[in-house]
Image (tube, rainbow, N blue to C red; front, side):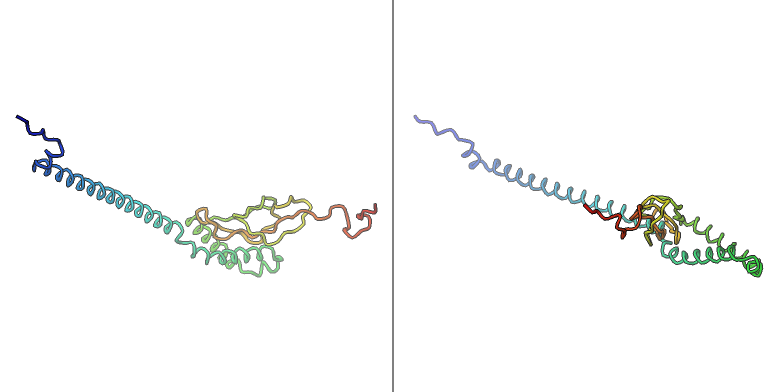
Length: 199
């Protein structure tokens, strides 16, 4: 008598409803796990983005506190320049004119200048006042003219036209300076026949 063929795994699963249900449950479980992984990844990205936004906002607030007085300081720089110029003119004027300037007026100017300097210091507004002979730094200085100076090295500062200022390492106004340039003809007249090669 012949025996019925033994069931193969394919025929067993097709004939067995429990096995088909397991495959469906496994498939549903895999899909659910994939969705969970996607949502977890999206959540982590949202948390990271929120943290980045928070850090940027903190940096913006810190910069606003640090540089909030920049425009106000720019407006006060001409006042400082005028006070210093007035006191310099008074100090350089002849004694007869200097004595005619009321001492209380001069004292008032000096007091106002000291108070303004104290306010600048409190706001971390620092002078950029290079000395003659210092190397020209384009990040802090603005060259107003290049002049030939015998005792100065090229690209060094010859004189200061106007002091500059910086606020927390940021230049508000560069120092306006004249810069030394190389001497063009140290040996004599460029139009002289002695400089012409006659060979």
